Length: 238
Image 1 (cartoon, rainbow, N blue to C red):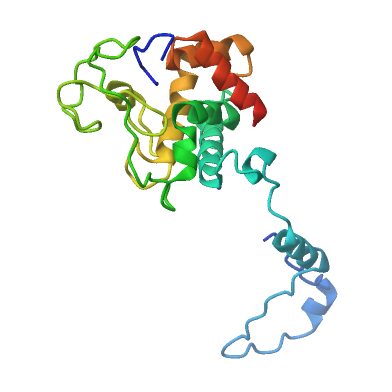
Image 2 (cartoon, helix red, strand yellow; image 1 turned 180 degrees about the vertical axis):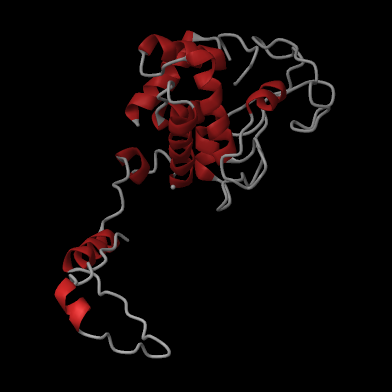
């Protein structure tokens, strides 16, 4: 649970033909013909090399999907969300080097990839996911008073984690990101939740190529070494 207080239990090259060389002697001795009122348009035909390159680009096979995706262990829409988050972070936080598989490990543990990809085509969950009410009634959970007026979690007395990546409302507010470009950061959308997770894991200058930083990042999500073991285990399997 992101930002939780839970304990250990818990997406044509063209070549333009060069103009013919001009003979200086001819220009000085021969009058140029009068130009027609409207000169006919002329477009140089693409070179053989350009045409071949275009054909190659059109017939290039799509990138091969990981076995974890083709087998159904990671639903395709979730994979798209995790991979988009990795690509976005590669541009916005180059120091982090987050891998989509780490985000997927979180998604597997928190919600089994949004109930195995139970979303619409835009990545929004068909049925919203909520964690237990953090009112202290569950072993290992501390009391977390409401921080969002019930806007995200539907509870104006206590908080509860929301969405497929299980963010507490206060943590979501701090790191929320629009992963699918619709102008809204929705914790119940896998694209938004995946990018928000990536931002959260990458915070404070972590370099997730380093094993120690990966552990630090996942512990931030849930302060439990058992949790870390589960997340990193799934990430390796993907």
